[in-house]
Image (cartoon, rainbow, N blue to C red):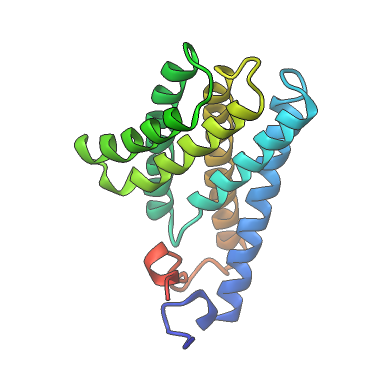
Length: 191
């Protein structure tokens, strides 16, 4: 695989900064989800799942620049809200079933396209799959899963954005915030 000038690998310093941003943001989101949010409201296993989900949401959000990160944050929350509506409506009345999973995944792909958010289809479908399967693993109170994953996603998105703002501010203070950032869009990472 060739390294292009738009790849984060093109500049070791930029790649190092990106890896630190992602690592710190993941730590912040995991900590917030497992220590601040879940300890008062959930069992240990649920808290760990929430921490993982928050960290994944954080990783999804951190992009090349603040503008792209804000767009990714909106996409992540939009997809999660779509999944939230379908999963909550289903799990409030019915238990997990593979056919229910298939129906909701299909709707999670269809609706973003219909409401003008075609880039959110895969994320909404993945979110729906996780929520439904976890609900199947823990059928008692399965209807809570969409609520918990919505909260975890919000924690992860917030942690990602806060970390980027802090890192950017530190870069300004140290004079290392100048220069073009690496291209970390999903399309530049393919291949």
